[in-house]
Image (cartoon, rainbow, N blue to C red; front, side, top):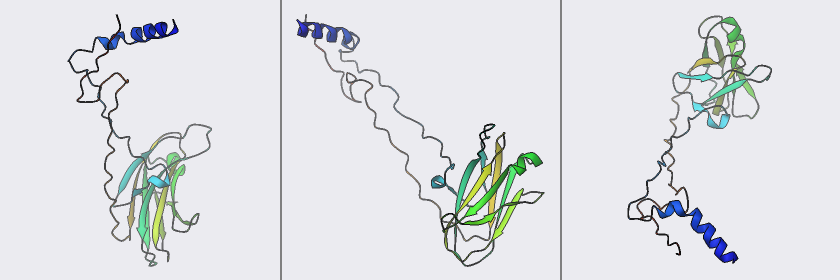
Length: 195
C-alpha cells in the first residue's frame, strides 16, 4: 500500500512535466551571467597605478567609526629615486578633504613608507618618498566621510609599470533547473505514468 501511495504522490508531482514529454524541446533558461564588478576594496585586489587612476569610495555609515578604502599597487625599483604621489579628492570642500587621505605601504609588512599630506590646493594630498627596498608597494586611499568621494591618483618618478595579464572571463556551465529538464541540445525526457 505504501508503494502505491508513493507512486501516486510521485506521479501527481510530475504532472506538469508530462506535458513536456512530446518532441518539442523544453524552453531553456538564460544561463548567462554578468561578471561582478571588480572592486579594489581589499589589498589582494589592488588595481595597478598606471598613469592616473580614478575611482569612487562609498560613504561611511554614521557612528560606525571606520573608513572605506581603495587600493592601488605599483612596482618600485628600490633605487632611492624620488617618487611623488598625488591624490585629488572630489568634492574638494574642506570638511570632505580632512576626512580622506592616503598611505603608502611597501615590501616590509606593516611598514608605513609615506602618508599623504594636505596641500590646500589641487591635488588635495601629496607625498614624496624614496626607498632602498625594491618590490610592490600599496597605495591605500581612505574615506571617513558620511558622503561618497571621488579620487584621482597619479605617481611621478616611477618606472614603467608591468601590465597585468588579462584574466579570462569565467564560463558558466548551464545546469538544468530540475532533474526533469534536459541538458542543452537533448530531447525532453519521456515520463510514463502508470494507468
